[in-house]
Image (tube, rainbow, N blue to C red; front, side, top):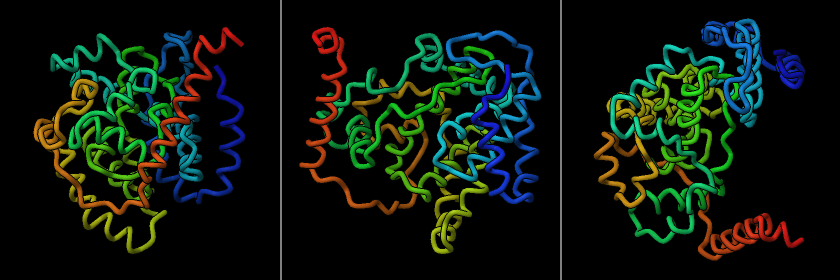
Amino acid sequence: MSVPRHLLRSTQRARQIVPNNVLKAISPVCTRVQTRNVTTPAYPGHIPLNWAENAFMAVGSAIMSLADPRRGDMIAALGETTASNALLNKLREQMLSSPEGRRILKERPRINSDTIDLEKLALLPEGTFGRAYVTWLEKCDVTPDTREPVHYIDDPELAYTIQRYRECHDFYHALFSLPVSVESELALKWFEYIHFGLPMAGLGAVFGPLRLDATKRSRLFQEYVPWAMKCGANAKPLIAVYWEEKWEMTMEDLKKELGVWDPPAAIWGKALSEKQREKKRREAAAAAAATSPASTSSS
């Protein structure tokens, strides 16, 4: 299986942007690749790679992620190609060690706007996790449908494990009341690196601060990083949390159960007014109705 052409072109462009010393720094992390013995797809969307293709993909996606942090596909590829089997098996063992985690592996729930009733969550009382999550989505103007599918993990169960990790990221934003900003993302990257140990999170934690000005970088390392290191190390295994069953819990009780606490208060942009939120709800409902099977069949 050859490496996709768009990655070849992107890597060539990125080499003109990213300094050589940065490439040398990321190479050791990106070459901790999985053992590759699979040559045929093991699940829908799976793209088997040999060790050389995996290494090339890892370095190429790292270059592109640093050159353009908005490339979600490259960030996803970096996470998959730098995650060793040993690390992924450790996450799976954390899931297997609790009844809740075992049910997740058995049922394999997915997180998107088709599986989560956002309108129902919006009716939950203030202070509940479900209400906090849907409020966070509205304030940040994002949806649960933006996570890339897994392609480069050979084992289907390990592929689901990293898919679950990926889709739960926004829950951490909501839990800790962190907006979508460079500073907040880096705080979470530090938290995730300490908690999960994924190399991709470590790369973001190390190189991401270069995008901050001196004031924000100082706050990151003086306030957010100490919180992330202590909180990430203290938290119970979050990969084994069945978040979809926690909607009605209060934020206070949920944080206590998970062994986590609030980070330093983040600086939010201007929040959407209730009128703006209602407009977005109506637009989303209209878009969903337009793409429903009933409307399609009648056209």
